[in-house]
Image 1 (tube, rainbow, N blue to C red):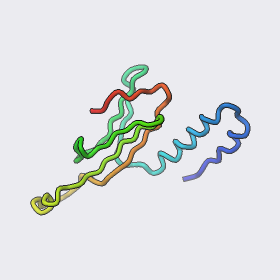
Image 2 (cartoon, rainbow, N blue to C red):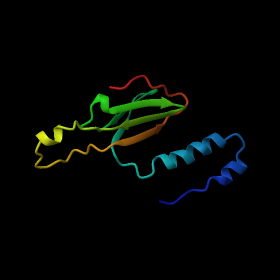
Image 3 (cartoon, helix red, strand yellow):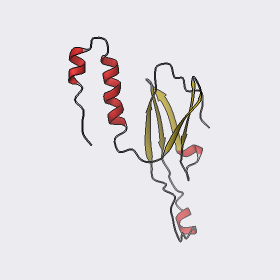
Length: 115
């Protein structure tokens, strides 16, 4: 992946430094994030929904947090110690590895809930 040097923006654009910082941080946030897959849907003019495919994770395995305009969704699956002894998988295709997915929110976006 190529890197973009935003230094000229900082030197020549007075008052737009926050936008340059957001572009820079967005480029770093999305680097090689492929798991879990997600959808962002516009529900109304000022309403959005984010769907994340987290098969195998329960509500207790997910941590959802918003702070300083950043929505963070983290998943950590800890299987019970005796579960692996009882189950005999012929094929195990559901990934239960931990993940961390971040979404940069615009200033006017307010998170109202998670289902």
